[in-house]
Image (cartoon, rainbow, N blue to C red):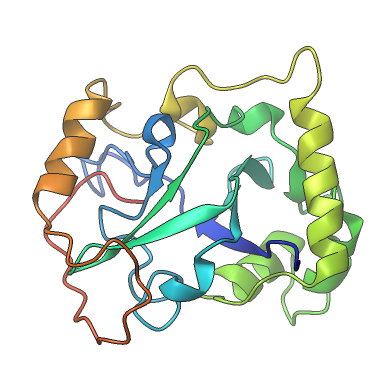
Length: 222
């Protein structure tokens, strides 16, 4: 049996209060094993063309910040749920991500990386910095990592998670490089609100039906 493939999810940094005073950056909903119900990434990784490819595979969440891009979470294999106007990615068991400051380093401008093969890959991009090269490679990418890079990423992640002081987040905001303007303290209510806005049309995204993706106004997306 083929091993699950690994797809990088490029998470943006929180906007400042002057840019969006209501932003909470709620998604991913780690506590509920959910990503995408807010409509984030609906034009690239979670588009109707690409989302079905994620079924049975794994997502590696890359969070940028002042200390480089860090691997804050690697999911178990995921299920893709067609929500009609968007796709929701679900996984189990559910667990919290790393704090940003304790997560394995994907790439940093000073040359650090816990996944050397990934660093070698992005360094070939025509950008002035490693972090810029990483963004260029993965901001809209919807293809899996090649097996050697995926294997090295999984090993680095599992080694870090197995440590006695793994540094896992207690609040979702700790997985961010800095707090958003508003920290969502009602996570379940927020999650249920987004789910209630959309009506599932199928338990699987295996259907070939083309679905128009609509993004309602929101403040908690990724």
